[in-house]
Amino acid sequence: MSFSSQSVQNYLIHDTKVENFFLSEYMTKAPGDYVKAYLLGLMYAESGLELGNADICKEIGLSAPELDECWEYWEAQGLILRHRAPGSTEYDIEFLSSKELYYGGRTPRQTASPAALEDGALRELLSEVESRTARLLSRKDIDEISSWLSSYGMSPEFVLSGYDYCASRNRSTDCKYVGKVLKDWKAKGLSSARDVKEHLASQDRHYALYKRVFRALGFSRGATEEEKRIMNSWADDMGFDEERILEACAKTSGISNPNINYVNSILRSWHAEKTRPRTEADYIAAVNTLYEADRARNAELSEKNRAKIMSEIPELAAVNEEMKDAGFRMSRANFMGESGKAVIAREDARRKRLLSRRAELLAAHGYQPDALDAIYTCRRCRDTGVLADGSRCPCYDQKLALVRENIGGNE
Image (cartoon, rainbow, N blue to C red; front, side, top):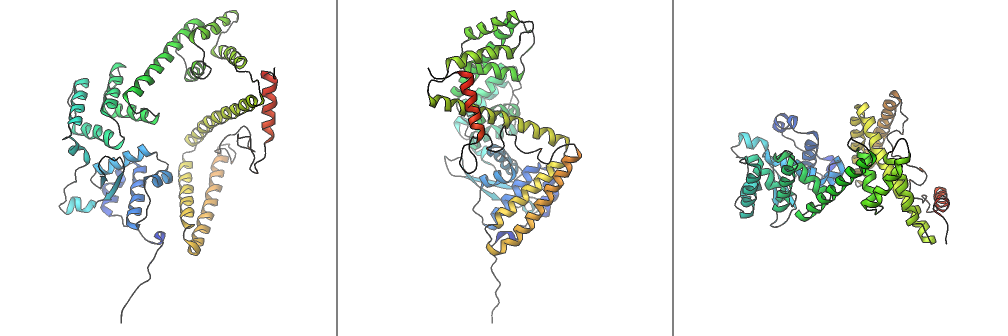
């Protein structure tokens, strides 16, 4: 006689074991998204799921660099260990026991950064940083700088560019601040000291342009962010040199209230004449440019609108998180076959209740139920010019007629 039990294949039916010591001593002190990432990763590990960082980023809305910072945090706490193949920035994660760390005699396992101190290039980098900042680096600083090299793939020259930049601009050379600058540069696509030099040179050129334009217009104040964006477009997008831009500024001498928008209208008209379409293909390209401008402008408006509403109604954040969770469970249930139908039905009902609650919160503050939806100039085609069935949207013909009317016909 023997005993056996049914093997449960669906991971959603299993439980993930979380130590009470973790809940008591670590969870309450950690950032919320870090806890979410830790628990999802633990579930993946215990269930044997072949899912990784990209899946966690998608589920909780973190960027890849933010998730790397999350794992750095848990590794520093001694609760995980990252294993990297030599020469690779990819890594596997091993979850360690919090109870064993405190009660089982295990000492915290070293992260990669102390070992990396044996590397001559890192030692030289740390020496250069200390020379530039005129202070000794702490162990925390050393670990942070080492993580920039190992987790973000930064070169020593790139790191030193960050310190040089902060020092030359009379900004903080604290490791945390320099790290923000470096990660911002990486997010913009910069990867080398040369990239940084070219980027800063471009910024300096823009700054010089702002000063010349404001002096020509008689302004003594600084430029707003919107005014900077407009002035950048004159050189970067329209291709005007400083002499031509100042020529446009000179044309404001006859008006009582000279302003950036007036100069912008002059330069836009000059640019339109310079790029006036000559063929049908040119007209189509001009229409596509209008759609691109609509999408960029509406994306910015959508983000600002969403941030405003979320700040006014803090409870919406929790509702949105629950809706995201419901969507996550429904998507996973799609792989469960027949047994997943009950999960889908339950989570769909939950999602509808949350949608109703969100509409109630919005209405209580004077907003329509769709106030958080993306903003479009044309809702029918979502600013693409093409409808769902593949046909041309009526707004396309309207834009084409506008292009023909305002920038001339064929010659």
